[in-house]
Length: 164
Image (cartoon, rainbow, N blue to C red):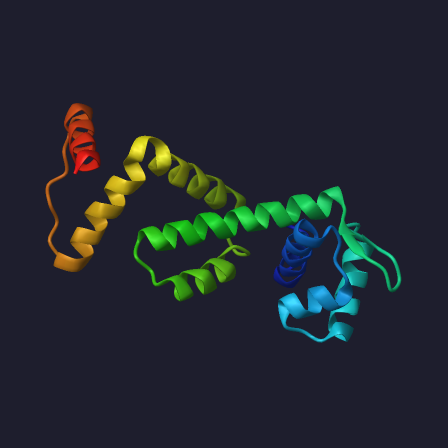
């Protein structure tokens, strides 16, 4: 997001995840989720509160504001789309998790929107499965197979693969 740092976005994601499971987040929960000291978490929570991204009580629960929730959800969606894309191109899961987390913060709005549209397009009517299968074959064999040019041929190919 434009006015939040990578670290702030990570805190917002952690708070969202914790509150979805428990209904609220405590400082120690957030610190544990992010692998940081509680004192570090307190300082960041103060910053997030000043930016209007969270509401918290001293020694009490922390919850996201609407703005904080929106930022966390957008960041999580970027992460999921990147992770799904990396898995589609056969990146090992551990690397896909790390790379998606690194890249979710640096995509421009336009790139993010187009990547989301691309993944939605591939998911439509089984395209994703066909592309994944064809890429897996190419990745292991190193040989490109001809691509069908007409929609009819493509759908026939798709239907025949779903039957097998």
